[in-house]
Image (cartoon, rainbow, N blue to C red; front, top):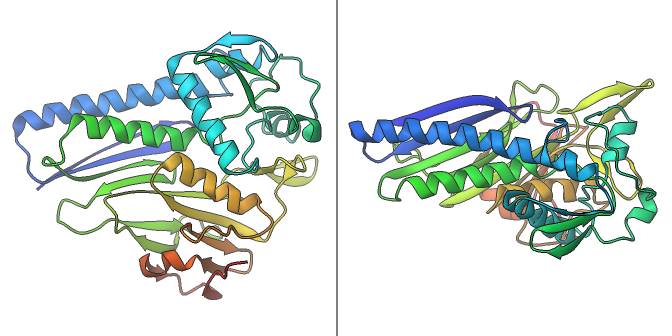
Length: 321
């Protein structure tokens, strides 16, 4: 029972695909090669749609026309609807209108030319987007889709895999976009998937391991060490609190969350990271690593936490507040 892998660079990350089959024959290998090619091309299409680092991307065009009603592609319309869903679900803790903050602290992409007078506080009083119809949208401020883009891409690619092979053919598969992972089924030998949580103090090592017990689950991580730099003598990172317009100041080093979609698991990590108290949803599954090397996890994750580094200072479940 074989498995097949592919790996490539996109969105400033390494993408890895693994397909595990219950059985395979020669014609299947050609189908796999075609799928891998399609997944690469689709990733490029999604990056061209969502990137704020490409001057010719659809997002850069939108950001250059703030305050105007712009007709967007079907793909962009879908991304923006998921972005609005995430914004509302997180009660504004995920807000894509932080692009000017990112630019001002040195995380520079394509400089937007749209004219918007909204500041950090005033901006939040306006609607996220104005929808004129299903494909015509108006921005009230430039946006950055980096907080949801990789998760959305993982979900999109996973759907392509499921459309290509039947459940009888697939034992399982995984799509990994730089640590945002979606897993389906099991490995080709029948064993369940396990996912390592990167050590924020030594990123080439694993801090903890989670066993996946569902047929389909996403595991996503946000961390202060992944995107950090010096700006005017201060250490900066890319996780912005939209309430203050500043990088998040917290003892938390990383948050890893599980969910049924990578896009929303990615948003849950940011909701926990930015929120000033732990989320109270009893069904939420996430773990937190802080600056003191403490590992805290929701009770719903207890049975899936199968290994923790000996370097951990303490391990304890989170208590509801």
